[in-house]
Length: 81
Image (cartoon, rainbow, N blue to C red; front, side, top):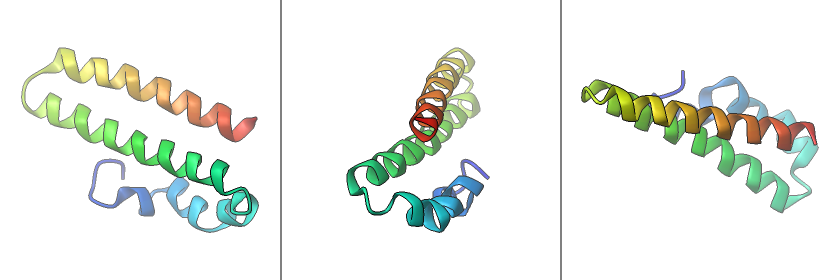
């Protein structure tokens, strides 16, 4: 569940952000909004990569995949920091 419509609210991280994550980080609005934005961006990148792949543009889809991995690492660093 990554590229489906509204996957951001239904994936494991999205559910955590709406529940426990909101309880832990909701008081720090700027930080919490940054988490939500990065999470949404991950899903957007995945959708873009899939659309490129489906259109036969494997090279650009792979580039999006690299961008997706960088964004995922940035989100994980934010959560771990």
